[in-house]
Length: 178
Image (cartoon, rainbow, N blue to C red; front, side):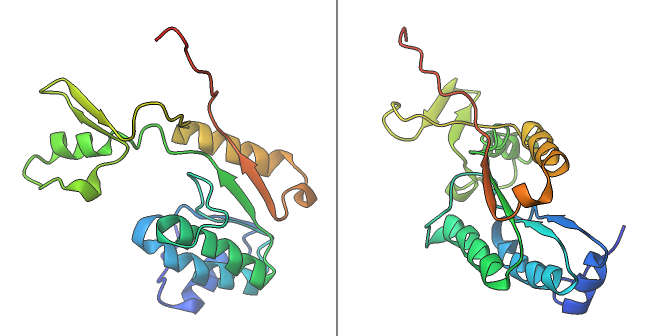
């Protein structure tokens, strides 16, 4: 294992030397580090960069988390660093995280910033869902995402990966008998 000091450009370059493909899984507040990683990757001749753009489609976004992710794509283009973007929809196992926090750390105050897509209250038997209940959304498990990404990266020739967008999503079947 290589320890990296992300505040040190040379440390990042040392870690990436000899690497052909970078798959970034950085999330949340650390997303700004991706720009430094991408710059270092270009300098040490990484062949392909997969930004941590997993989730919803960010293309054209300018604000918030999606805007930050779209900005990384712009940086990759400006650097001339080949990239492959994977849009997956929300992680199926991530929507329950506010529940996990409540159960595992009941002394930790849970606020709205920790809630995800659903608010599950097992004790009362209630689930709160945003919107009017008619919107469609497709979730993908992180295991399936990992399998899909690794399959694409190992089975397609490099020229079919360069500056491409790939989408993985569940089936969009609607049951009409509800």
